[in-house]
Amino acid sequence: EPEVTQTPSHQVTQMGQEVILRCVPISNHLYFYWYRQILGQKVEFLVSFYNNEISEKSEIFDDQFSVERPDGSNFTLKIRSTKLEDSAMYFCASSELRLSNSPLHFGNGTRLTVT
Amino acid sequence: DQQVKQNSPSLSVQEGRISILNCDYTNSMFDYFLWYKKYPAEGPTFLISISSIKDKNEDGRFTVFLNKSAKHLSLHIVPSQPGDSAVYFCAATSSGGSYIPTFGRGTSLIVHP
Image 1 (spheres, each protein chain N blue to C red):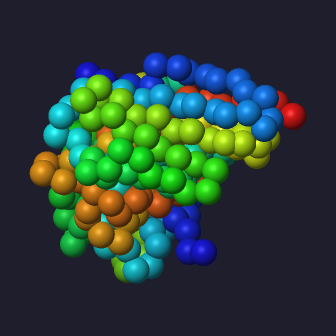
Image 2 (cartoon, rainbow over the protein chains, first blue to last red):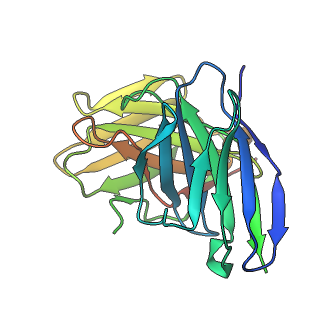
């Protein structure tokens, strides 16, 4: 079964550094998402992406964050200057359709640790 | 602002018994609800869903019940198996607004042999 793949599985970075989290969505999916989960908290929506542009973003997704689809397969999340509170599990997801009943397919996540 | 609430952080059940995971929501615009299951070191995977036009949806050992008037849904697993041990997330979407699922905090289910 096709799956969403994320790299790296764990990223450790120092505060103030830039990080890029990478994702390869399922190939025939058109909608892409980033979520994050801070330890012990809920899974929070960050941003959705369709047709090479952001379609929706949350208040968490401020100017420090950006997303890009640099080629036909990768979907990246960049954090420009990391803060301690950015430490979380970051999940990439994709869906075939943008409908309520089109479930998201998630990758295994990247654990980001900011020291 | 927790629009989707899972008030039980954990649940422990004996193998073979029923597991009942609960979820409440506050946004009356939500009209589609999904349950995701998450194992350690993996991402959430879709399990079962229900539309607001129904009050029950069944798939094998998994049944989701929806009580719209109470803004409450529950996931029943019967019989529970040790392999069901995972974190279960309730999520909700609105076809009239954002299709982006809003997730709860999750409930960690442990099924003891």
